[in-house]
Length: 545
Image (cartoon, rainbow, N blue to C red; front, side):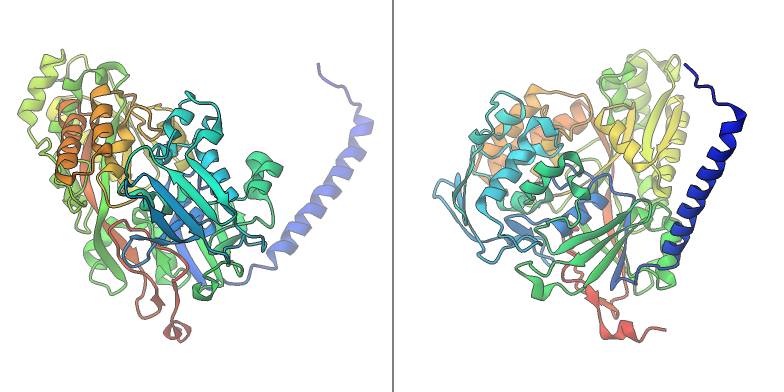
């Protein structure tokens, strides 16, 4: 039904609305005339975060902010990347390795001055495994007693999760099996401690609460969409004396050119996101003293959707993998020392040697494609490749497109989306092929391999393999490192050689831009995890023109 308004009544309405809009415009202009004071530290952090909820964030830009706002029982040492005491000042482990007692600091406080208690830890972990919250990283708690059963709805009582408050400052954790990397999991953002009262009061909009009670080194002062997140030092944090910057801005950008310009002109102090490094200039830039490269545990790879069309056939997937010249991609596009990858788990991962993966063999690729019913690519349907906006991702996509056309005679369509759409489509497995990357959450092959288990929220391929699940499950129960490594090798061989669920392309080289004579508190480590609290400007930075 359409409402009917006479011309005589619309004029005064328009005049009234015009006055309202003018007042709003003047208000906005007045606000623009009072810009925020400059931050002590400005970091180019990458694309706009999807969320700052530590239980739900999946991207690296999101995780960096969440890790600054919230802390776990342990935290990552900024130099070594190893787990050290966080909210828990110490812990005890039972002789069988299955029970942990975490003793919380008596001076661990929320940013509003309230004490952080064992009940807060219990609530935060139950929230992660609660299937109603659909946390992609819920698998981090599958090692805790009943974590998997709760997350898969086999147990509906959250209190059955193996974490309990013995008293306000003592947390008891029961594991399904001994887990060598459990303390590393406790440092990961998914297991950080969040504020129950705020979440229960505001629901899904709890991150909009101001002030937002945080457990980490910083508080959230503002989140300007398509601009920046501004953090402020948390004066109540137990380690406040060692937080070096009072105000930190994390800038949202997707343009490598803009990022470099901001850095070169002194408007930004650090570029942390590797996708914001203009790779076409790396031959020149890597000689400059502010460019720091290092090895770390990270792999760039491609996911297949094994439930769609020709990609249901492993021969097709293997043909595509065998026809890619990975050395060309690593050397031609990525110029910081990246190495071609035939496996998912990077070299240097603790107590592990990856199996031999697939090599470049276009003749075998053409043979397999013909066996699958597509000789010389005839009859092969057009398919699309999902990737997010970043110049280097586009360059990789174009190389794949050209190689597959040349070697196999098949046509790839490029589907470039902004970050949030990319994450949503990948989570929904709404793609044929998808650009992917993984940075190790801890130094163990499990951090790469367990995400392709059937029940893992990060699988995102449609692939379910009881054989793979059983190998990972057996490996994670073992304490003998050699036997465990062999089981993991069998699993990885199934993933990348036999079933070819993913196609590894290259192992990342870490890249960070900062001037070492002006910024201190940044160290390279094998998991590329950099806490914000020790980072600050030196006196020399104040003298910069």
